[in-house]
Length: 373
Ligand code: XIL
Image (cartoon, rainbow, N blue to C red):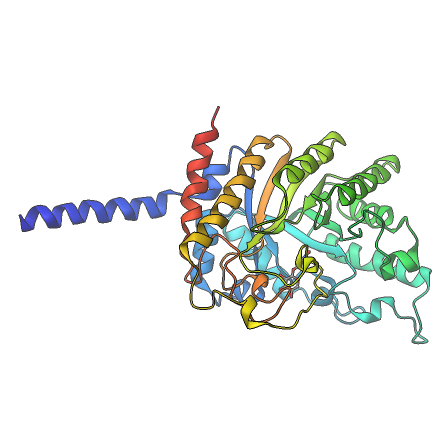
């Protein structure tokens, strides 16, 4: 009896060991789209080796969560810092993963000097244009042939679909988006070029993004796809609106990629917390931090349903969707612990704080088989 038990245990053990190494999101979804993740500086430096194991097993596209933003690459004028970005490139090569560049032009995480002239006042149009040209040429040039595609412009739209009055727009004028894409195209003609934003399920903002795509097309400039960031919650967005946006972008001829997917499980003070305006920093309220001791199974199940609902749509439109990237590897790393409110315990991703797959991973693996033609 004892022997039988231990044999049985051995079989069970080897089965679960097999299951753990056999199942892989990147393999399961390979016929449909890339499955990516975003790496933090600490992860790139190898400080979370277990996370890198998860990446190796499950993800085949890598985005820098921060290290390819302007403030990291060129903190002072002309002082380019490529160490961490180069390390990410090396990691991507080791892991045979596709490298995505995020991001060339944004109003956030861009140092103040970029918009300031020698007299301390607002930079002139000519000066800002020259700085943008240098930045894009240097960065895109360095990673030419290595970065598959760039988020050329990030978050140029207001939620009502009008153009955000960022310093870029104020100084360069409305065609700054076309200019940025032209520069990126010239620096690496083979690279894919994306427009990336949050809340693109919102019909007004969707129309704004369609206008940007059409503006680029009219100017004869390359635009490969629209990146829908995908910072979502348990009760938003309406999945039908997500699908409608995918269809609207596809109708322009653009590809779609989901670039920064996460699903917060935490309550919010107000609807400002919908989206991803990183300048928002709401005061910590402990009653809005209900799961610091652990996530109730019922809430995790709700989140799993949201992920499944979304991936069902992504699979249905896999002819349009080339990549789905999660905004981080594990719940510990997720920026949602600190946005829109610092210091909470969120559970926004697919792997837990110990880098173990949450139940949703198995569900997403099963989903692929379920929807097979
Ligand atoms: C976030 C990072 O995850 C944080 O670590 C950082 O402090 C702020 O930026 N939209 C984007 C991403 O395009 O670059 C942002 O990433 C999240 C919102």
